[in-house]
Image (cartoon, rainbow, N blue to C red; front, side, top):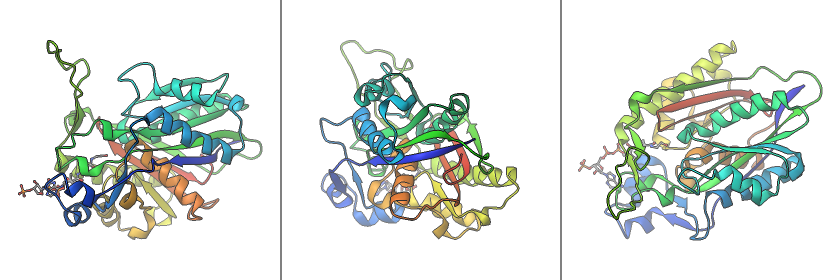
Length: 327
Ligand code: UT7
């Protein structure tokens, strides 16, 4: 028996905001943003869209491509840092209702931009114990609602969207070797944060909507180290080398981060899937959106050796090595 990704789906809201659009409101330019990030545009949720709605849209596509029905789904995990409600109910429960899955567990997982890799690992463990059911793993974000649109050094990075995969057991031989590493370093908690939890002292008469705060340089340096570390670790663990990888699906945060990882690992940049030019940084959604696009575009084929790797607030970082589509 082997655990596989049986289907993928993604959803990007139709509204596109280009760098030139931002430059009409902020002291910035397409030239600055593109040269510092590799981003030209991002999708921004409509007013009546939110994380659970986009997550359900991506999930429906993943279920359709996997050929599974709502009653086949036994687990829904939504990785997100921008849930519909600030804490509860979970976005995953809202997705469960929207998809009308009659018998499933559902919960959110918060590991910021590394959340999808964390969620995939949890769902893989669950799928091993539940061979007759399928799991939906979703990364979904509406970061446009929590970024500070006056802060040109952070708001230019982010976009909205959702990506999903369906996991399940397939009868037959064990699949090829796969592995995941999960890491955290809470000492860097201040590098990317959004206050407003129990740390925020209530102000009389005020209901602030706290925004995202970013220490760009610190995150950049950490990201390059983290992505290279997890990719090297996975290869070592499986007795292979980064050069033997067919593709790396790194969190799409900034093209310059990915270029620096490629240089550090002495890998050609072509090994790294890149789509952030049109999506911006969609946090936990970026890896499943990239997987879905690559698969539908014929750039991800059965048997390819790939690494999925992400990093984010926490700090968290994580990676999965797999031979597509076996986990
Ligand atoms: O999912 C994880 C999320 N976070 C990240 O991935 C963030 C990682 N870090 C980064 O991507 C980069 O640090 C940024 C893109 C955020 C910033 O790029 P940078 O090359 O580190 O720029 P900087 O912060 O060093 O700023 C350089 C200059 C500053 O001006 P002065 O002080 O030199 O006069 C900034 O005020 O660029 C200015 N600047 C801008 N100028 C035009 C910062 N943002 C902008 C902007 N347009 N949007």
